[in-house]
Length: 162
Image (cartoon, rainbow, N blue to C red; front, side):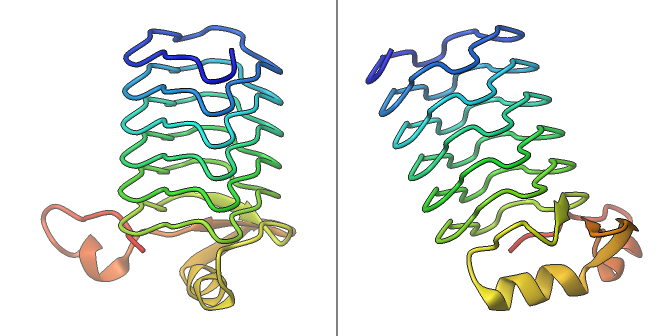
């Protein structure tokens, strides 16, 4: 399915483990709860895609366009996001333990409640330090990004954006 055209496809709950979706157009696709282990999305366009609760362990999202994508509570353990564009993405509650985000763009991405580990590779060392300062250790070597305390005092607290 390399270079497939699946814009607005409804793949909720589907098992696409080990699928080759390299360079595919998946704009607005619905992957809610889908099983996507070892799936290759490298250079794919998933702008506005819904991956809420999707399981993507060991998936390859290198150089993928993920602008505005919803990864709420997605499982991205050991996933490659090298050079991916996650501008405006919602990663609330996502599991990024051992994920590689080297060179990824996280402009305005919501990282509230993201779980990560010491093996998670952030785009820059400066961002790693900022994330560490905003996180609490939830078990040995695993951290969770906490809500922004300054915003928690407002009536409608906002997400942590980077």
